[in-house]
Length: 222
Image (cartoon, rainbow, N blue to C red; front, side, top):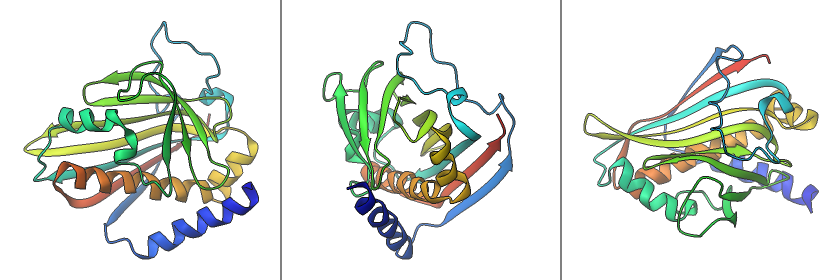
């Protein structure tokens, strides 16, 4: 099953790229460890099954995907009220589907857990470690292709809605590192997945992306 889904997922991503109209502005910089590592997980939150960057393999990548949305009909908090009801409202179903396995449906709270189903052998278990009215942060669990964290956040800025996805992660194991860094397959799948989320966020908010999507990557040796 995995062998069949993997090339199909990559082919879907490549095909989707051919039809993209949103400009992508990519920048790659040198990073430093631990300055570019993830935020700390608050005391009192279970570490059971967590994959920290120190548990992974290869360099750490800190990535930020950013879109500035003008004409939005929703505030940052109003947007997250909808996203927290069901993250699949803005997730590209062909590339990522959130299935909740712990916690109440219709909300995102600290301690909730999901499995994100993706094309190929990418399915990723995650746990919520922080949630505010306009953001939530997730940590990867055992079996995830990455070891680290990811955060979705929004803010109201000068009459516009800014939406960002930021991740701090290494390969979950040696094979994941090779796919992610050396062959760049997982990296490109993720890039299309998260930029698709930002495009869908803009549509749900009733606005439009002003310049496209900015992607900044910092690579740090751990």
